[in-house]
Image (cartoon, rainbow, N blue to C red; front, side, top):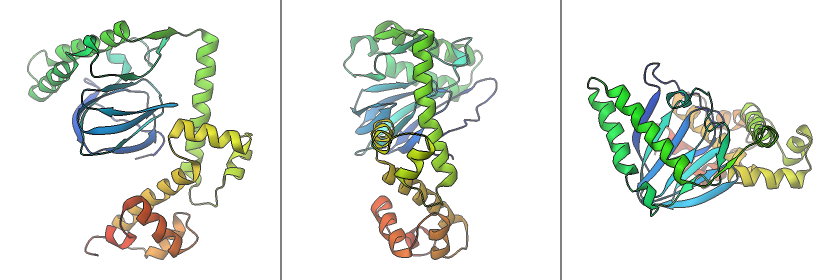
Length: 274
């Protein structure tokens, strides 16, 4: 799974997934599908574009098409995650198209959204039972959900120029994440990447942390550790070889960073190794 772009493979006739998630952590990514999260228990930190918030029981968040978002469970948490293609509610390939929500976050006590949990459970039931007409009932549920959001949340209209500026800024972050994904094995630095994207280093650092929720070095190490973890599980290469392949210049640094991010040493990730 890519860290920056997630290419969902959804059913052609019913391009939707909905499920319960427990103690989820997902690093910065984006996709064309709409994603809606409802917190059932516990708390989870969610970032969408340049805004982040700690969500607790009953809170919700809407991630629209191509929004850069991430989440990190802060305590024992369970959420409902709904992901679907915009074409299920609109003729456009992106939603919303001519407006944006002032904020993607929805407080649990909002009176207009007291029925949302039951609406989501209704979609889950229809999908699981797949009785005749279930696709229409699911689509009706999605339309009610998105219609409620558009009617009850503060929105702002987007002119062609303002949408172009928004998309340009978001595209720059997406390009940076793509560059890191493709070159994480190399000796990357703030100076090198900011020069590559013709940005001042200080501006690059502020922009990156605001959009991704962590500084550049932490994000780079996170990507490297995720890649290393997969190699530890799936390959027979030595830990030293994997460390070097994933951009670490020494086994000592690899062990330290791995333990900081995963809470264990690299050898613990290999089956049969304690």
